[in-house]
Image (tube, rainbow, N blue to C red; front, side, top):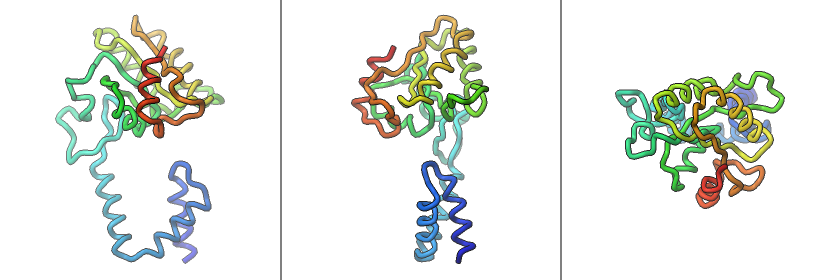
Length: 205
């Protein structure tokens, strides 16, 4: 039993925000459930992974039975959305929060924050892909505004400053703004309410 618990614990430890004690609780929970529950869970995980895609344009994870002909997600391919504004976020989950607001532009998932102590500010994120996209869309005039939307934390604010520095050589007249203070310090966008997000968008600067 201990070997099974240890193996499951190591897997659950890879979940964000999960510590050793919680991981072991999850492991024991799985091993004490009926076989039908475990089978359903395993099938659901395999099915979810099989239908998950990463949009090559905004880099968000989206679900579908198959990719679109262009391989891009429904948000990027929706011509009703404003293509001249891109909201840059830390992770895919943050897009769900903004989908309940008045924002009608498109998105870009950075894939993480840039730690204050990190010397190479491009490493570990999609920053280079953002630079390449902005450089291309600034030349053809598609993009007019970049909105940086990160948590109000030290790493979030450092990421904001670092991206402004990285984008400066390629922004070519594009306005770069950041969320206003509709959010409290330390707030994660994933858990913010729509009213606060709307306020932060209106107060962006």
